[in-house]
Length: 319
Length: 314
Image (cartoon, rainbow over all chains, first blue to last red; front, side, top):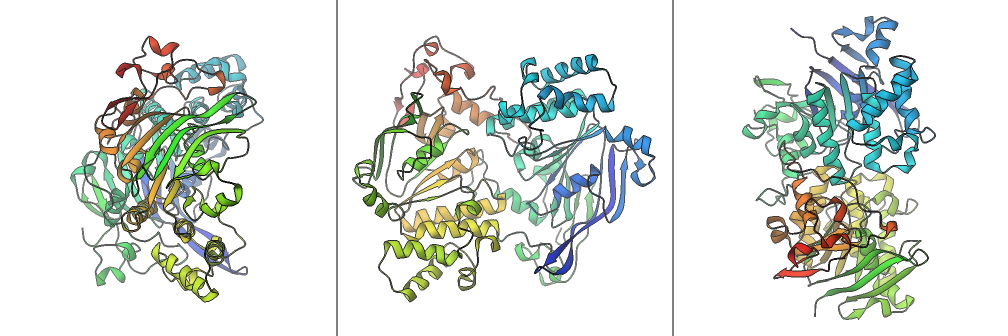
């Protein structure tokens, strides 16, 4: 079988916090997370802020080290990877972040921003790098004239395109997209989304898409992963997303989204409460304080991901 | 006489001879919710602030009229305006953390409004603060009133802001993207709260947002802004079922529907510094008309309550 582009197995990640200024405590940001991203596939991670979705992205990028668990890039465990090999594979996994204002160096011209990764990772040939830069810019719908500009001279949408162009300079296999459109206006967001979908087909790119926006996730993803308080509560294939029953939390997210095309008012009062602090995890099923279907049993027992069928896994006792 | 009437509102920069909000007029009945829809930089927030006679630094010119309940706001003296602001009209903003005072407790900040506008005894004010916090759905109001903004979560902070805005018992609330900084689950709760206040307290709301979904469900009536102008105005259902302006059509079609985007809106908003002579949407228009290049279209009424600024309907 083909090995996935990136895979994580049983990842645990905790952070240390100082409580009341002196007492140190831990909290878990990720609990026993496993997932794999195959070539040409998009995995979308949906969840509220504080559910660990960005941390997971950073772990796959190897920007954060997990406490426990293994990360595989192209089937190779990062723990056993040699330095030279690591460097080669590193370039294949890229990222685009939420805020295009802070992810581009304000003192670099766009040309330097684009050329730097190419010169370091591919070859030290400025002429060919420049050709590649022009090609990539036209792919993202920008003209040559931006090359000599500084990031501040570009609009938010153009900056996000530059950030995307920078990753494309070194022909990556996987791009981690951390809220790529949430800082953009709706018309610009749809432009960026269309580009992303286009590239996915053209270069058979894989994406790990992190977002709290349901329409964005549904638009791009093949697999949808819903996270709550550091755990995966549901995995669902996009094709069956609208034809199946979901985890109560997924249903809550679906209810919370005001859909302009729906015929039903979203004001149903079905969405309750806020995500708990990972410092004070609820007992049993961590979603129970907000769950509509909870029973006594859920207060004391933790559900684990269960296979419903080939396309869906849910962590809930009631499913 | 409508409850709120805005007539030919112009806001701009005098030295550059530039209007950022250009001849905006609309009216609103009591208990209605007006949605203002538009991209960033289209003047929707400026219009919102202008309803309170507040102008961000840099705005050197304003003209037009804002009439609230038969009071012409721009004819009042500064002292009279202060009495009205917070009492008759209140505003809630996008980011509660930067619009709440970090060194005062939530209770103190709400009390300040009560002190200014009402003649209440201290214990009465305290009671009112608890009552307000309860009204906006903050649990344990007595404890929360003693909290500082940083001790509250994002959702509670926004609720506290709303409580503060409601303290003066306003009749008109301007909500400037009040949910953009929040998670979807909190967003819907805040929207439900505003919806309820509108129903129960007959609060008139001007809701500014760039999110189609929110506007669709919260507003009775929508103004679509483009480059400082209203390009289309209609009752919500009519606007979404039968959008007339090409910009509105593109906006609706560029919203992802399951896994499809029907049409992507190309390009960006026109640069007003270049002073476009013709239709401001001309460069992005999919079916540009001959007239649009040099002539500027007027807002015309196509059918009942449905106004559009486009030559196609002239």
